[in-house]
Length: 426
Picture 1: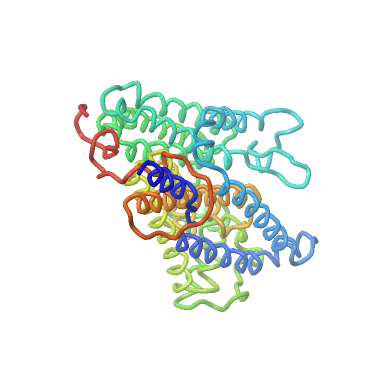
Picture 2: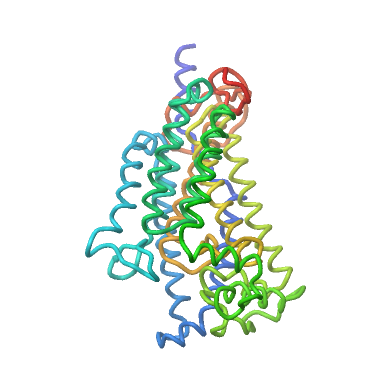
């Protein structure tokens, strides 16, 4: 009997997981669309810079290939190893924000000091900081998930860490990334089970400070006023938004045709990066806009579904990583699309995996690699549970630890509870 139980445990430890096929398909669809649209939107810009018509297209492919390598490395790394190094991730996140101020490394572009010069390309360090912060906060939520409902300090500590990062980002300045980081922190705390009054009290206090920061710089005020009425000054403050709206209007239902955009011909600024969605709207029309929005909606749904399944398998760190990545990618895509369609004030955020870029493409691939790793380990744990319950599973060979084989539990039982509550008690 003992030999049979040991045999079954050994077989469970040899089971492999599986990367979520739906997530892989969605990511490939988004990345493929991005390759096509970068190629279409960047030819005129590249020729204007006299670097060859396919310069940005080839550059995007190179960074996408590098991102796939990084994603593959993350996908082969056990999440318990990543969790054990969460404090190192936080330290690296702060160092990444500080290194841009070092002479010889930091580089100023358009008045903002957000990049480091790697020789072959510039790297925007906040892209790495966002991922590192999600890893640290996921670990924090696991360690303090009970205290989040009972103690103010448990909620204030991660908000304080996010606040310190925001100060460094505003010094660069990078208001958009700072607000994105704050939103990710708030959403993850909420999903991690923080008491809602304890979470929203500091947020309400911070709102006036954020408003003051937003209007402290004249260029931010001009962006807000031009957003409210871009046609009042269409050749200066409202230029970006008016050109984007013209592109969207020209697209109508099915677009003017791939490659036939007029606005990308030196009218629409940053047509291959920040305003690539406007080019999509012009060339592919309303149908193209719906396609992009639908793909990102599916990506967000799949990421949250993976996180929810991780919670059911009592793999809380995995769940919070999935929630954090889902929140970050969905918010960034929402802001980027909203800016291009005139729904939000102008802000320089790229559209993940679609906009041309180096650091954004690389770090988005890392984020997707984390999501796929979560899906792999959750599937592996489910197969181990099925084997030990005597159900049929597909057996492959791969090492796993005993924690993988914990049975699923209801979402609101015992210490696995993660639902936010209104009261202060657990």
